[in-house]
Amino acid sequence: MEIDVLNTVGTVRNEDLVIYIRSWFDLIASGGITDACKQLDEPNRAGIVWTPQKIIDVISKALHMKSDSVVITSTSSCSGSPEGRVFKLLNGSGFVVEHQIPLNGQYCDVTAMFEFLWRGKALAFTLDGLHVL
Image (cartoon, rainbow, N blue to C red; front, side, top):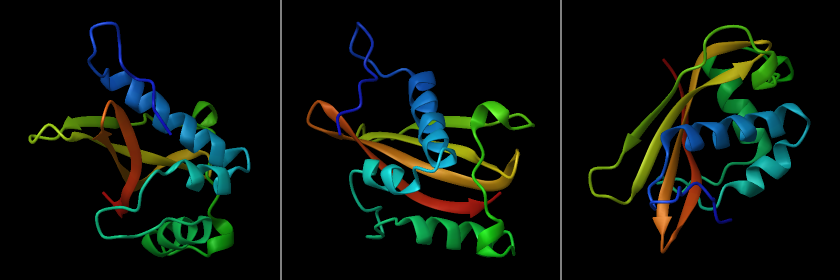
């Protein structure tokens, strides 16, 4: 999928990357976790191909919850202050974005780390991992 986040001068805006990730979480919240996994363009650096069950299992294990208790919530209905931090990779190959996961109505201590990696003139979207802050 080509991600259209380039502005008129050909640079990537940090806020557009964060907005893209929040829309990805919102897709999951609306019942589209399978579609959200299909939006991930590549396996992560460790070769993990994220599936709906893998995402839920990693979150539930990190928070010591039952997997059926894990409910990704719409970002617009979450309480708390979300953090979306964008880092440009020093080698120029793309960007890393860390964002708290909207879970059960609030932003939780589990952070998702995404990568947007240049593939020609497009950015590939990957989920690098999920970890507790």
